Length: 157
Image 1 (cartoon, rainbow, N blue to C red):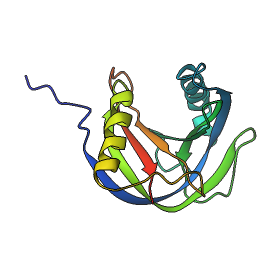
Image 2 (cartoon, helix red, strand yellow; image 1 turned 45 degrees about the vertical axis):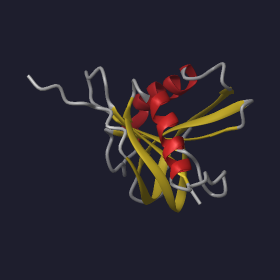
Image 3 (tube, rainbow, N blue to C red; image 1 turned 45 degrees about the horizontal axis):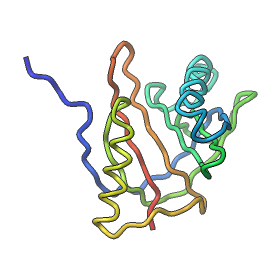
Image 4 (spheres, one colour; image 1 turned 30 degrees about the vertical axis):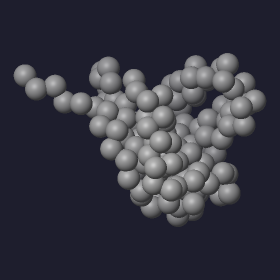
């Protein structure tokens, strides 16, 4: 029996924009993480059916911002238009941006970050810091799976 690797650690540059609806949490960083991220994702998954124009409920998109004191972490889905935002949620657009992207898994996120930042340095890319941009974690939900595919996107300049 062949075992398929979930974390490929393949790196590339992608150009993307996102229209997102979701919820967020702000907590002390790094002390409250990853627990705060897991909490908001679980809370959001319980309300995901409230979003009528969701593109794919199996893809959880989590932009975040962090200053080593606190972090704000979002749990979102991509939508077709920001027309109806359910109460208690936020809708926003991330403009077209170049990202360094790596594919890892929910069990190898730390390795994914180490590898993507090494790859960026080796290839002359620098992270773009919060100028209409966020780093993003994308989770491809697979109910019942122990390990799920995760992509990390770092905005670059």
